[in-house]
Length: 231
Image (tube, rainbow, N blue to C red; front, side):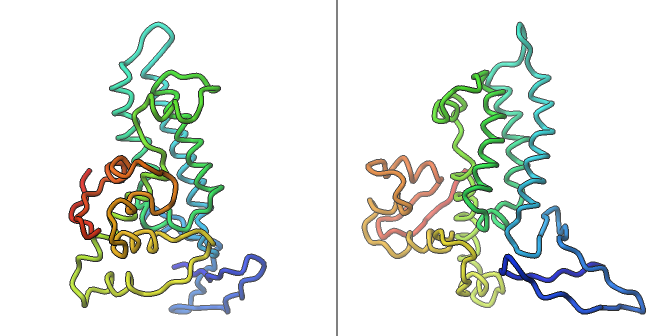
């Protein structure tokens, strides 16, 4: 058994008193691993981020062995390997920990992804960021994470009223970060009347409503409610 104390104060978290179970002292940890996710005492998932980046870097060995200077797999095959192995590492249980990531943590994961995409496309390190995603025909991890979070929200929203997951979904939780939480982003879909404004709830894309909707993977009714989430 292990125990951990959580707190949002960066300077001080009250210590845990000695806890014993069956005359055996339970060890106090700074972080614990639960179902493959590292949970730290401040719930900022910094250890989880580093763990994911290290696993992604190890998976690059497979991509490296698929190509050489004068021979190698086609870009399509390398892209399939990337989405099946490397990206699946970054997206494991993403709905549980990615909403708490800061911009710096997200950028660290994006840098690791772009390194993998350069191996897939054969582009050099000085290639512009937009051209890397365009050549690979893949979205940034930030957009993938938003899609995963919204799909999970929509899934839980359809559960019976007495389901504890739906009750948790409706609980007002104070965000650790100043950025708009994923809960607010999804609520924007259900609260707006004009479907043309639904596409850029984060004010990132203007004049590309249909592209944004398709990019996140949603089909919407005219009243603004999500009708279907597809892959």
